[in-house]
Length: 316
Image (cartoon, rainbow, N blue to C red; front, side, top):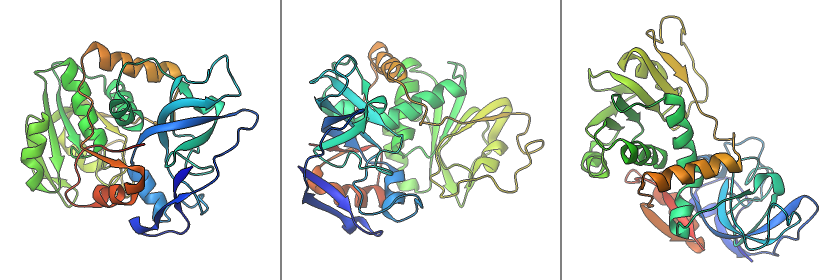
């Protein structure tokens, strides 16, 4: 099979497209033919050597969509069935989705029922699953005023689509550090765009709900813009900081609530709940950029660049 392998930490050029033996099934594991997958910021961090537990060489990829090629659990995972896999230790402790085939633990393979194209389905797993789980944690209502901090990210755009698909007239603003992207964000559906400059929002506006994708680096500032009894859901860590520092939960929460959503909490039922929501509300699911497996290094370079926007996927 063809696969993309990282043998040592570094830049996108360390993602090498090469031929490897197709994995052989073993008890409790099944082989999936990969039809596509999304590129995620966590994979960039791993490629850069910022995931201490990961040893190279490694095939990266914390998600994949495809069909079961060889099964060791025919009752739950019949050969030819559509499946999704995300998270666990995929692409970290064992080889992940950056390949034509991936060998996965059966408990980490989730059968799905959907008529979506492979392009659409490949756009969904980690990105839309994270956005959907966060939407539920935020308890979004039609009357809410919402801010997406990190609006240009794939998860930010996914969240926008999920919310606007159900509540077309809701007020939902986005942020960007690069205001050149303002028109792109408004075209995507955001009501307004706020500049995020050096971790400070350049606005006096306050919101009922803030979807925080920059993470611990800006959570404290986000609470400066939350209304009383509002909710901040910190899900992303695009700011490169993993833990809250110099944060007083008594005073800095401003009588609001802080929550989060761990996208590692996955089940087939929850994945199909997301797909049902997308179908019910006619949610637009479309990647911003599509690359081939051979172009994975280019996909990483694009996602790291200053002009990246939305979800980037690979189709086999």
